[in-house]
Amino acid sequence: MNYLILASLLALGSGAGAEGLRVVATTPDLAAIALALGGERVEVKTIARGDQDPHYLEAKPSFMSLVNKADLLIYNGLELEVGWLPLLVQGGRNPRVLPGQPGNLDASENIPVLEIPTGEVDRSQGDIHPLGNPHYTLDPRNGLVIAGAIASRLRDLDPAGAEGYARNLGLFERELQQLLTNWERRAGPLRGRQVVTYHQNLEYLADWLGLGVAGYIEDKPGVPPSPRHLAELVEQMQRDKIGLVLYASVQDAAAPGRVAAQVGGKAVALPIAVGAEPGIATYPELFEAILARLEAGFGGG
Amino acid sequence: MQLASTVDAYLRADLILALPGGEGVEVEEGFVTTLGLPYSLALKAGKFYAELGRHNLLHAHAFPFIDAPLVSERLLGEEGLNETGLGLSALLPLPWYAELNGQALNGDHELFASPKGRDLLYLGHLKNFWELGPSATLELGSSWAGGNNQEGHTSALAGVDLTLKWRAAGPRTRALVWQSEYLRARSNLPAGTEKQGGLYSLLQYQFARRWWAQARWDLVGLPRPRGAERAHRLSGLLALVPSEFSALRLQYSRLDEGGGGTDQVQMQYNFTIGSHPAHRY
Image (cartoon, rainbow over all chains, first blue to last red; front, side, top):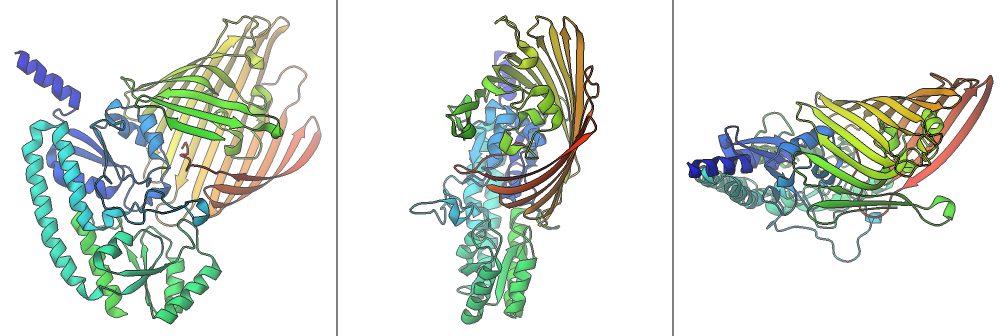
């Protein structure tokens, strides 16, 4: 009897009842991984949609309602959400998801972060991230790290589901490992090729596939391109024979298109998050789509 | 100047200092807010802008126009309703976002300047918020405030606010905001009851990545105090916003009051330095 009461109290405390663990993820990539691991035991809600740039999200009160009800809040970290997440956590007034609590998971823990600035950082360099480049979910090897962290947290919050989480983690890791081998083989010929990208959000992808990022459409991170900068970029691309401009499908297509046309190359829009385009509903599907787009881009140029 | 930080796992502190005309430093707001109270409650203590509608919560640099709406200026004064006190707010367990706010403030504001120290100003605000599809939101709020004035009689404020926001999905930066508020004040004085009210309605349209065009209509004198004239004002504003940290704004206003008209042109440059600010929606 006492045991029963204790069990139901625990269930209440963790929020894991008949309706499952309520997980709120700030980005669709993290949500997709959480859903793959949690399966039917969790209910996953996403704050930023795949067709939105998570830098510029607004702290809508409706998001505070999501945070208010969450058992687990998973966020990208590295200041990607710095413009809105603090307000959502404050407005959500949910003690379970405050920093330091088991319900608060910074997915960037244990990620090998790229581009951590050295020396003095200020905003004349644009809207740069002092903790390093936050777009790490675009390297699928990081997906494995993230999945491990999320599965372990789900286990802590909902011990009754531990077996299921472990099984789902195993499936997720096996599938992603196999796909990784396949993707890396397909991308083999691209290794060492030079590209120009719109924003500094493809570094992890480039690092994984061995692409060289020779320049950016943006003057500086978050600063729209000036005509002078674009002219210099075109000159550089012509000199170094770079024909491919990559940009995220959430970014403006005009400048990449103009630059590519001037060098007789191609501008290719990449989906950079789950849900960025129809048909990309899982983390592996994201890389399938990116690979296909890259192959087509290099293939024709 | 704005400093905001979590004190520990339970408290967040905000301090906003102003440097008015280079004469010393003035505390615009300074308060602590709890982060993890049970039952979705939050407690706020210190000096802050009272939760009276939408515009009263804004600092001058965040005003949608260079100046405050006429109704705010005439009813609440240049500084708005900014007092020292305690606030308790709750998220109501409803299917939409509904926040109920109760504040007890030490009102030395003109409307509530009771000579007795223990006379407080009590204020309530209900904020409702809905998402209308993926790109639009609706906020509907109502506020009440009451307390004793300097004559020892009661004064009261009541207001409603309505805000619609739309932002285009995808890479094109287009946004539209329509925000309106009605506010009225009633003061019981020995000579009788004085009533005054007014409203504003404003539109903000982001027509290119760095450009905003805005229009505002102001009306005060609904109702109007004895002997006072009704006043209208129309304002237009063009803003160049190179980044989220700076803005250059040019505003033209025409005020019609008591048969005479006044034209005004204002220009403002706004910038933010320091840590990346989180913006209230």
